[in-house]
Picture 1 (cartoon, rainbow over the protein chains, first blue to last red):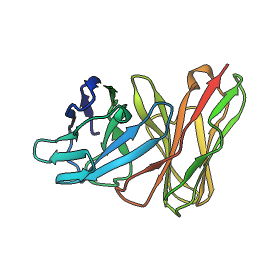
Picture 2: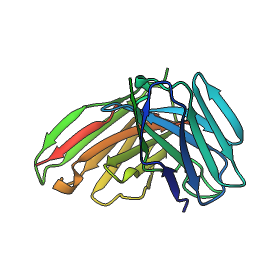
Picture 3: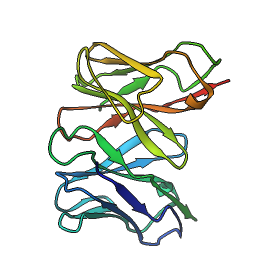
Picture 4: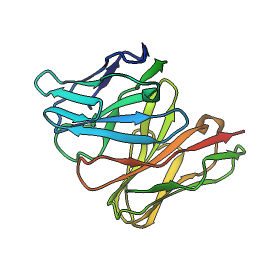
Amino acid sequence: KNEVEQSPQNLTAQEGEFITINCSYSVGISALHWLQQHPGGGIVSLFMLSSGKKKHGRLIATINIQEKHSSLHITASHPRDSAVYICAVPANSGGSNYKLTFGKGTLLTVNP
Amino acid sequence: DVKVTQSSRYLVKRTGEKVFLECVQDMDHENMFWYRQDPGLGLRLIYFSYDVKMKEKGDIPEGYSVSREKKERFSLILESASTNQTSMYLCASSWLGNQPQHFGDGTRLSIL
């Protein structure tokens, strides 16, 4: 079964700073997900990526399949980016890919 | 936009009660999921369903059952609620395969 480690667990930044959140997993995968959860709110899918890099606004996600590692970057961070960011990967290599294993999440707080 | 609707945001029940949590999605998704989210443990899969009347156990199915009689609706049942089932419950849906999951807003369930 795939194991997922996220770092850091907690991150506090000043508005405008560049943010990096890391995710490592143990078993080869077809694609990795990054999710965002605001306090008291539901979860939103930010990215699904299988190679290289994806960008959406100020958010950038990268993945290195060989090293089993992904990063989520936030440029010019803003207080509204404050949320829990969660990494998820397929639970098993091969077979069905709709069961996901989730990291414990990174709590990001961006102060004005 | 995909809409996943959970029947209640907050619910308080008593030990021993039979509890029903309902989830409805409007995008004709094949997959539906029930998770619970606890501090420090992240998201854990209780049950999922890949078709009407089809279900598979997730990582923590004990004390729970599910029902999927129609494609758009997936119900989670706590057969005899216990205090250790106090948690945030999240429903999600997706297309078949490793596709982004769309989450409901969650139900915060307290068992007294």
